Image (cartoon, rainbow, N blue to C red):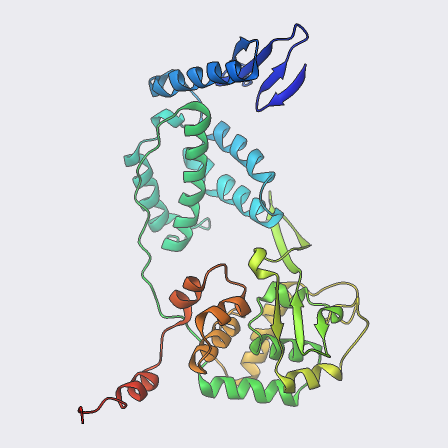
Length: 366
């Protein structure tokens, strides 16, 4: 039979056969209900009727475990997301969701049970047994569960729950202070090597660490003083094993062109290597982000700067740009954000000095 659509086939006798998933057989295979018609439109109409009847069935009529739905959802997700995202989904499912909820039937997982699950993760959710997970981490877990639940609703007519996502307290984005920036900049300028100039480049372009590790000399246009973000380097973990992958940036908007300040470009010229080599290693093989994180922390210690994450350089760049008067749309494109609202919400937190400067402009009406 030739396929004519989603689970629709043209039979040898000329009729169309539509197959609608209605549950599972005892051997674990999907159970289908077949409908037949002489035309494609008729078979689609009959399939819609079966879907409608199935949606109105009681939830208890379809007995399928969370583990089985999660497996199907992961198989579907693998076709549409990046390898790194898929690996993250697998880790969340296998390490957090299945150990507690995997054996439950989807129809028995109530809103109350999920709220209890969320509270447990907040209090005792760390895999090492030492306390709870952050609200952000728990929200990530429940976002994956919600997608699994949505899949169960679409494919098997199982009703969705209405669990409560944990609240995240918004904190002002941390950045390097002016004294810290000056110390770091002086160290990088006076102790130049490939790693240090890469960190300097990141401080003045706002690149993510994976994007920095994936930067090749061919990505830097010295004539036009810009760099092109085309790839990212990541270490992904799956089933207890990890490996380095070189892929496309985080999103479509992350593929971008970023201007380079003139003084940084002049330094880069002194270290320019073969086009196909990565700028940090000077070889055809890149440095992995974890290595850059460790090198960065060693530099912070040498500079007498508090221990912060490499990503703080990106926050620092964004905040300085706002303070220098960059409009949010321009900064959004420089950072590779999908929406200027992300930039506004994350980085537009003026300092007290800026607030005082604005207020000082107020005066009595003449």
